[in-house]
Amino acid sequence: MAEEASSLVGIIETTVELKSSVEKFHDLLVGRPHHMSNATPSNIQSAELQEGEMGQVGAVILWNYVHDGEAKVAKQRIESLDPDHNRVTYKVVEGDLLKEYTSFVTTFQVTPKEGEPGSVAHWHFEYEKINEEVAHPETLLQLAVEVSKEMDEHLLSEE
Image (cartoon, rainbow, N blue to C red; front, side, top):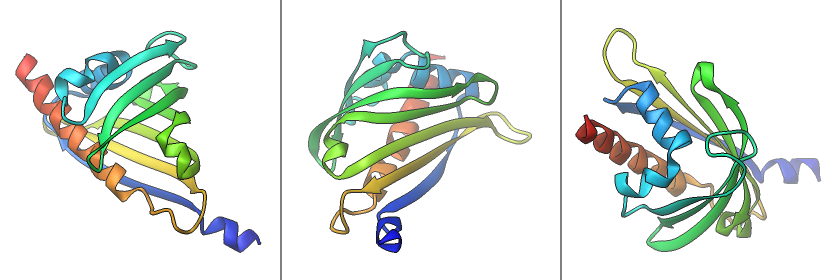
């Protein structure tokens, strides 16, 4: 039984090279998610604070987004913040993802590039599928990459 359960649990991750600074990128994602629809309107329609304080542990954000051509919703709570390392962890507490996953936790970190301007975004998904028929969330990771690139372009256009 334990072996069967473990095949439902997974971790996938990726990195995205960015031209914008660590501070600006982290601030947009964590501190101003309600501005994300300006940066990536085809992927994210809105991000609304439902509970708590924006950019603080315990904050609950309702995301309206498009994934695989379909409108979706996700409610995420900020589980932990590490401002010194520009790291944030979100747990999905409601929404479409929980139709396919019993748990879904996203950790996002942005770090400076070595010896050159810009930064690197690191996305880490930890999840448990409800059954074997559910795909690993590779297309969701691809969405995170697209969103990161569009956020980067948006931030550069603001300068």
